[in-house]
Length: 245
Image 1 (tube, rainbow, N blue to C red):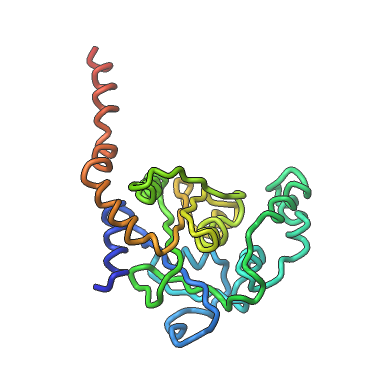
Image 2 (tube, rainbow, N blue to C red):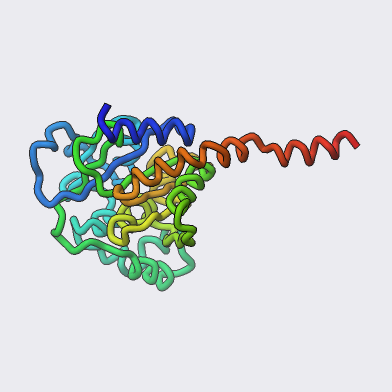
């Protein structure tokens, strides 16, 4: 078992998640590793994550990406004027008017145009490259423990950054990569329409440099905090006492 398989297994066991943690890497040169990746199927980036959490390997590039917002976020294609102006999102009923939608788009972080050729996306357990970002799509309780594990030894206060749009490409992938921070997202219109992300699922992404620390801290949380919370002892004792009185 390689280290990524080990980390993936430990994450799944501790968090009790069924879907696989995802590894992502921005690449500047296309090399031999791509032979095992689907770089032909037309898809959105959120759909690449959907496939990866189910065991598939995907390469997202300028030729196969069909979401203009994520293509622009990754510097693969220019942002279309209808998106930049807010026309598209306001017409979908996502924002009150074009000005609000345009303001959201103007604040989206993006990679420089042409700096990267694409993004490798793989289940963490089968990752054959050095990942830059780890993404988990699961229930909020699972993501809560990941977030806590990231500050377990520091006590820092986390600040999540989201425009409630581009949840997978920017919130969960680009922001952790560019800002070197843990970032969580409630999801967005695109990923909830284009994938089977459930109503009760959200996303979290973190730099791969924090992977070992997060897994080890999760194991310490598992010694006491996690089982106690999941046992709901206080809730049971409080309300069972009320029912008995």
